Amino acid sequence: MSLIKLNNNGVKNITSVGNIGTGDLVFISKQTASSSASISFTSGIDSTYKEYVFYFVNIHPSTASFFEFNMSTDGGSNYNVVKTSTIFVSAHIETDTDTTLTYRTAQDLAQSTDYQKFSSYGNTGAENDECISGSINLYNPSSTTFVKHFMATTNTYDATDYSINSFIAGYGNTTSAVNAINFRMSSGNIDSGDILLYGVN
Image (cartoon, rainbow, N blue to C red; front, side, top):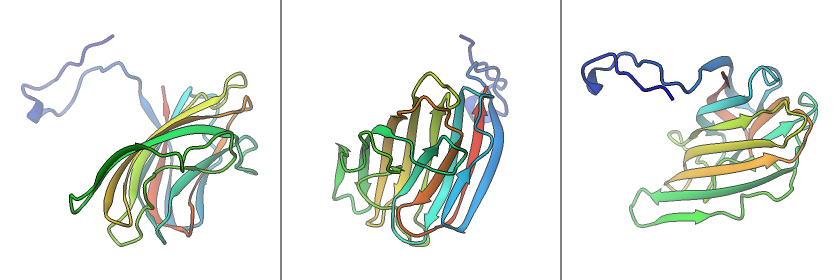
C-alpha cells in the first residue's frame, strides 16, 4: 500500500498530491439532460474496465418523483435485468423537527425487473432549487460468470424539505454481460442535470 505524500507544507496549501494507490478514473462520456424522458448509456460499458462509476450532478425533475435506474444485457433494447437490493437512509428536515435513520423496504427489490430507486423516504422535489446528486459503482459488468454488483450513495432535496442521504446496494441477477444503463425519473422528465461515466483502472 502506498502512502499519501503531500507536495506542500500544509493541508490548506495543497495544490497536488502524490501517489495514493487507488487507481485512476478514466473519463468515458457525459450526457446532459434537457427535459429528457430518460438518459441511456449504450456504449462504453464493456470489458475494458472491471469497475465503472456514474456520477450524477444536480438532477432536477419536472415533477416531484424518484430518480432511478435499470440495466440491459441487449445493448439497451430492454432495461429489465432482475435485481435484488437493499436501501437505508438518514434524513433531516429543514425545520429541525424530525430525523430518521431507517431501512426502507418500500424501495428495495427482491428478484424484480423494476427500476431501482436512488432515494427513499420522499421524492426529489421539483422546486427550482431542488435536485438529487450522487454516484453508482457497477462492478465487472462484462462478466459472464458472476452476478453484477452495484453500490450507490445519493443525497436528495426532498419535496417536503428533507435532506435525504440514501445508501443503496444490490446485484443484477444475471450472468449475461450488462452493456447499457438507463436513468429516468419515476414520473415526468429529467429537466436538467449531468451524468458522467468513468472507468476505473
